[in-house]
Length: 67
Image (tube, rainbow, N blue to C red):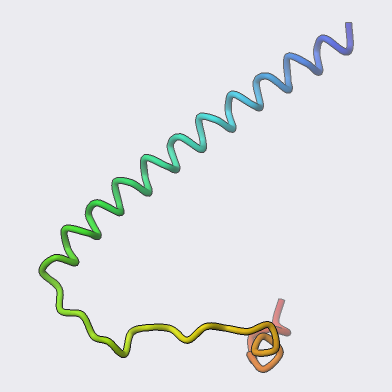
């Protein structure tokens, strides 16, 4: 009886997780489309490109020790 309750709860949480993931995907897609439309008319600056971070760089980051 207790096992059945856990199975039902697990199925419910799996369903909730799937719904949350679908909502997140649709939200990202919606924002992505809006971003693409905006970027068609925006000017791009080549200096925007971020440099690749290496693991050693994390220790040089002053915010690293704050958490």
